[in-house]
Length: 262
Image (cartoon, rainbow, N blue to C red; front, top):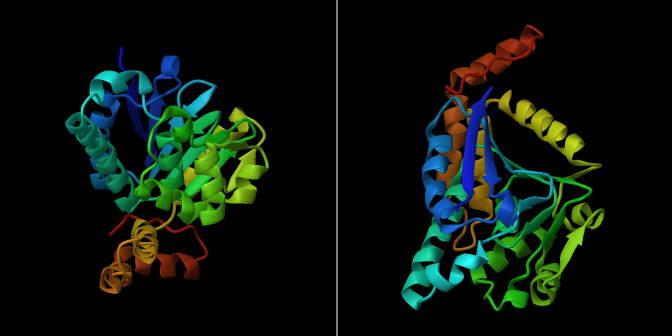
């Protein structure tokens, strides 16, 4: 039985759930292949302002790849290349998303699950959250692009410890290391905070958020210097937008702005 990725949209917020609780919300081959179409919908639907990632159930955010499939799905070098290409496409789409993304992490977040949490703009964790990279304990390589993603968030020294020892961290260590932006006491508080932050973001100007996202994407490009022209073009779209004028009117009239993303 394969797991599921569930995408639910309401109030400008898309909630994408790793729904494979019998297998620790691990991502199987079918889920990897379903991912791109769901992310394309998030990217292309103007009514969607924010993406929230979380895991089904009350034990795990995402346990990484479904390792029980490896003897069949990754049985040959060619099959492994195909599997890695599925993962790489998802990572590329997540990193290229110009809408804010929140990871609401409760329970274990391992391997690929951790990587997707680290790609999120805001990471909210419950006190029961645990983040780790067990690759060396499973005989798996941890690839350069994955190491880059971890080192970008927690620095190379901490990344060495996390990857080489296969360590996991939880509690106050998560915000101290930069793995979490906020630590909540339990799952109920976590989900309430995720909703509150998502609704706050959904109320901001979409073109302004996109310009900020593009700015961060260009600033943090690992392969080259920032594409300043791309970042400037995104800023120029804000200046020329109806939302820019609405923001000024709302401030003058002392009311909340009504942004439409145009």
